[in-house]
Length: 332
Image (cartoon, rainbow, N blue to C red; front, side, top):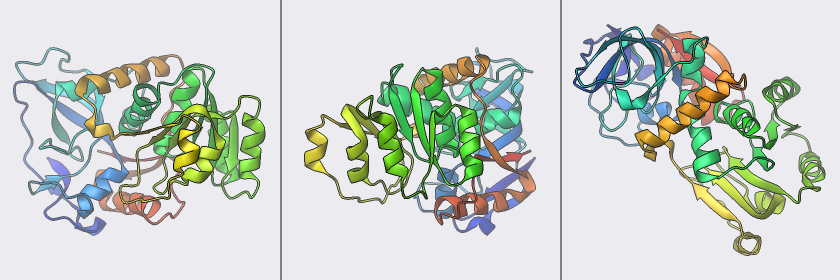
């Protein structure tokens, strides 16, 4: 089978495209004929060696996938040949990556693709959807009627937060970088969308939240959060979620935090159990069926151009190019 893989960590051009042995499903595995995969920041961290993991080379890259069940192991009970599925959480802890024509995946990490949803959309919403759901509901305990703030409302996680929060009956504030992204974010359901280049950004937010008393749930997607600014906009008893910025060491406003009864909640999607992630997938499925889930696809590449896809993701994540809006999807 054709696959995108590396034989050592390094820059995007270390990604090779060529033949690799087709996997065979073991007892609890499903063999998926992959149709689409997505690129995530963590994919670039693993490929570059920024996150040091024990990798077995050649290492097929990628976490997300969507496609059709080609075969099942004897112990598989949730899927049958011909089912359309999507999943994430691959390429880690000895699990095979997904940037290939076929992937053997334990059934606990796969979910049924809703009727009518494309494989590209299913792959695009995989890791980011589960991440947003975990932060909002498991960690953030979001309730209807609360105000949610998220940076980067058209990004992968940000656009997922907007849609999931709106689907739960929250009021959503988001920041974006230009007028085109403002319109896109509004279309996703955000109630207030502010250009983060605007010198009046925080004044606009304060005016909007004043009747409510502040923001209930702040979902931080940026690598270097400004906690002084965040705390000043929070409501008494609010919750602040962060899930990015491994090397960030921002100043921390201790006094203003505890006198507002604020909670700081960090999480990594890959620490969540298979059962917890399956609950997230079910919630995303329900939102799709209600017409509220449209994963934001930015650019598409063929599998043979996986290196270019990684380069674009790395430029947007680490170099702040501003060229990304939505997910990068790779078709197989």
